[in-house]
Amino acid sequence: MNAPALRPLGIGEILDVGIKIYWRNASTLFRIVLFVVLPAQILVTVIQVSALPPDVGRFGGPFGSSFGDSSGTLSGRDSVTLAVGFVVATIINALAGKLAQAGCFRAVADAYLGEEVGWRQSLRYGLRRLPAVVALSILSTIFIALGTIACVIPGIYLWGAFYVAIPVLLVEGVRPMRALGRSRQLVKGRWWGTFGVAIIGYLLVAIIGAAFTGLILGVAVSSARNTVTGFVVSIIATTLSSMLTTPAVAAFATVLYIDLRVRKEGFDLFLLAQRLGVEPRDADAGAASLLPPEVRMPEGEQPPFWPPPPGWQPSGRAPVDEPGPSAGPDEPPYWPPPPGWKPGGR
Image 1 (spheres, helix red, strand yellow):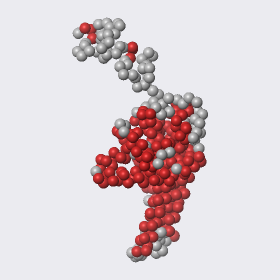
Image 2: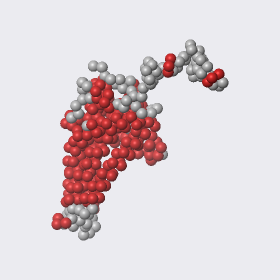
Image 3: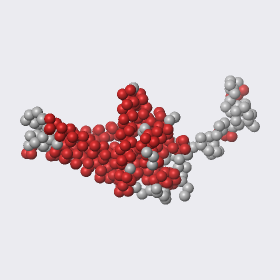
Image 4: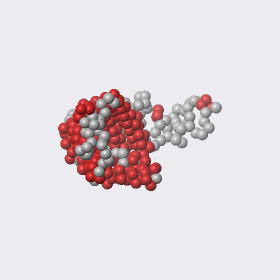
């Protein structure tokens, strides 16, 4: 199999490819998130409500007083119960988010390879690698937090340097600590480009997610706060927001990871397929339909390869300090022109 040659992409092109993958495989990506986040949200709500003291009404309306209303102060035991419930709920949310992210990564990689994207195998793939993804997330959070506490700039730098750590972990099969170092190595020399993709991608995701969640909660929950309806709408809004945002984050990070390896290591889709354990039957169609059209020079203006070799010039111009064969009055004797040269013999 001959995998199509990939080329380095600009920031806008990386975002463009990520958005194309997102929309063309939206149904599968949404299901990956739905079947993980929705059960997690239901379980989290049950845990939080169950952690309330007996004298606190669970729901408003006919079911009792408003959520959070209490006839007195909380005892020490009740406070501990609430705290434990909050911690357990946070852990469940985090695990669900990481599993959905890992599953979306596999689906995005399959789409890049032109493979049929399936939500079941993507989730199985993510579940097998969930412990490593969680460990990596904990380590990266600790390092970024320490860098931010010491001085804000190191924290920002590490956030950008670790941006492709999860794709590294999932594709290359390395340990979490090694994945962080490998991500930093790939980003080295391309930190600003990586930061640009990361910050623009996160802003797009945050704006869409916040607007969508705010719209639903503002319309539906304002009249049903702390009621059964309010909790149901809150679960639905959170799930739908995750369905919109999680696949986009995974798509941008995956495309950026592939681009960094193309730039530094001549990475191709055959190597990606080997790492994922699949055979890209239609890789040419998959990649060609995703990559933006390359800006090409007119016929005869193409270098032998890209980037061009040192000294190559369009139109067969001779290298520096070597006279051209047909230099007229408006043509420099060689290219680039000598200092002070003007057209027309001026």
